[in-house]
Length: 203
Image (cartoon, rainbow, N blue to C red; front, side, top):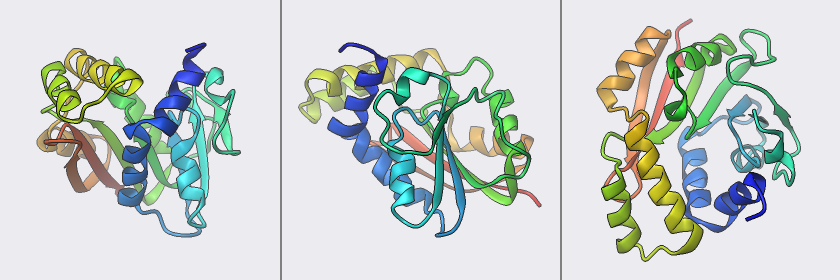
């Protein structure tokens, strides 16, 4: 793989991660006409899914290399801590596989809430409390994964052990502390190694 850009492009278009993002997009379910931002979008697959449903979708990523081969036209370079948007700009913000990697995810979440409209929704995807390297290895074997698909899953399990893994109760408290009310959460991937969570900003 020549660079990160091509690696993430392959992940989003040629492995199960693309199907996971499609599943997450359906679960988030923004309404036509709403304004949605996907933070840490990589090449932009998730906002491209949203835009097919009549939604005004945008993507941001801190790494300009991610946009070498963009999958969506409305993407911009931005740091999650210094988002270049006015307060109360978006009806929904999605963040997949980013918060758990940050040294202080709470600060990043506060920044995201600031640019959400009242009654706006934050939807996140992160490794669940059940994810581990051992769990990832078992799923890779059971699913007969090879190549980049296997390597990325094992890397995901290792990163989850080293970073953050949040349970439903963990996220309820975090959401409450940043001014959100959790409305829904569900487990995905194998035996439940990934957690989707959705919260609404208090008006």
